[in-house]
Image (cartoon, rainbow, N blue to C red; front, side, top):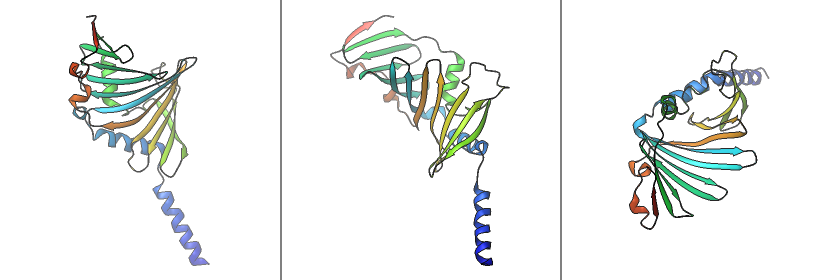
Length: 208
């Protein structure tokens, strides 16, 4: 019996030693994300659920100043490309491509793209809300000391145990719930560059 108790005690101590805090998990996640740089580009899916409107789902591909967004709303698809100076928007239903001048991005917007999930929990009190065999579910509550009063009051971050990669980040903003998920690295120039040869029959509407 003493030997059995000793084994149980050893297992309990070993398990406790392996336990991680929310801060340690997020720090490791930041380190894993930092292994990738801007030159690789990244892709991410975003779901925006709005009251009375429904859910808009989009997949974004970003490489430097270039970006392509594939969006779907109410079963209708849209595709938009941008190189920072010009935007191309394709409406498959009309088979029409609209060309406009791109709106200048604020520096903070660009930083947000490149940093992605890194330091996302700065200004938040975090704790492990739930744990499964494969994931940590971390609740992020805005700190009283957070200087950004427009920051969401709460965010829910899910981190994969095997890779320490973020699985998803969900939050609520005015009249909408936003979820970012399916993050991957490695985007090619072809994926983010508008190629008119792919739409030989489309009507071009140049509004520049």
